[in-house]
Length: 236
Image (tube, rainbow, N blue to C red; front, side):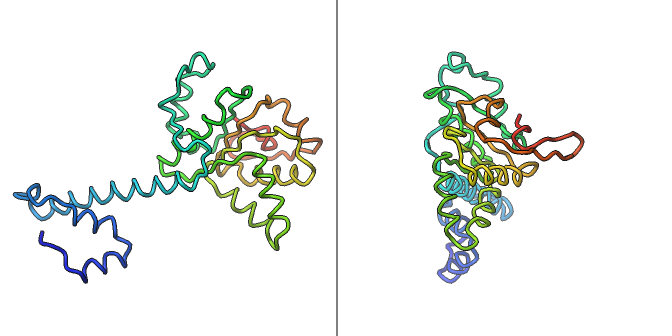
């Protein structure tokens, strides 16, 4: 392979093939000696794809809004002392629960590491090239209040948060939500059910969630081969 002329570089950039261009420019000519054209192309494309994937993952992590950007499931210390099952954490790390549209609950007292776990799981999802987002419930409430003041803001808000393949809600039900917030949460969870996965980081057992959300009439329906209840009854 010879050096790339300026016009070809421009065309590659115009097509969004910057990673491929950078791989071509960074290639080691000595490594290419003795390789046929197909092998040279395969080597350059492999390097470009690796670079592209890394950039995509980094972008997903950056946009996920992680409270702890350096959180990592592989760096969890003292799993047994924190009451964490290493096998369960390893299974969650495969992100297979997302493929099954299952939800996860991290329950524990303040300082038990729920927020770190939620961020680590969201980051792991990003590394699997899955669109994830982390948000504290007080921040979710604030965003909802702002959305209600804008034309079509509520619809845009629900569409945005329903679309994340994995949504981590930290400090879940730490404060009692008002009626407007309760309605939004139930609508949001209804939209996400069966399509996406949600991680709840909370101090409260699931049996207490209905009480903190206030009274409402759960809507029952069938979904797939099993009988499903209201989204707050469906978590795994």
